[in-house]
Length: 151
Image 1 (cartoon, one colour):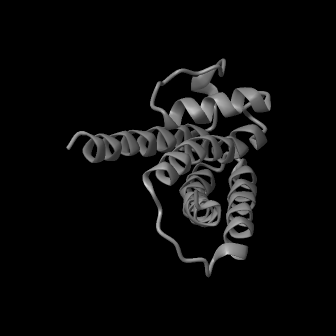
Image 2: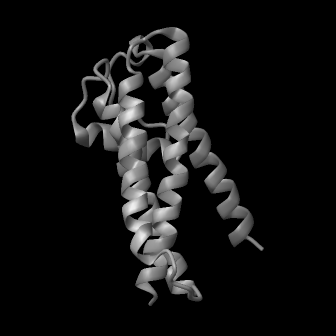
Image 3: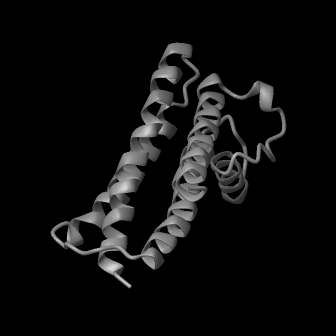
């Protein structure tokens, strides 16, 4: 098992995923809903976590085996669920616990569509946009997984 290569890939994926929070900042500015700071802080925390993971192993070269791919996939789902829940938890309009925000993020990334937020229609538009963006990314991930596994 190549732990350093797994951490390298995970760090890179976290840094790329952090960019997905930036469109919600623009939506927040457009609708002036005042929760842009939650997305900016989520972006920075996710980017820094990915960078800290990637930096020590950035020069490591190795071959990934099938087992490494399975580990990366599982870690990626869990870590993205955690990282995606940061803006939901920090948004003052969404009064949910961190467990509930993790559930929201994870259910969006797995495209189950389940929610624990009461009064979903009254949430700021940038937070609703972010939830839908997570669901879209999860749906695209399932399509990619199906195309990769089915053949």
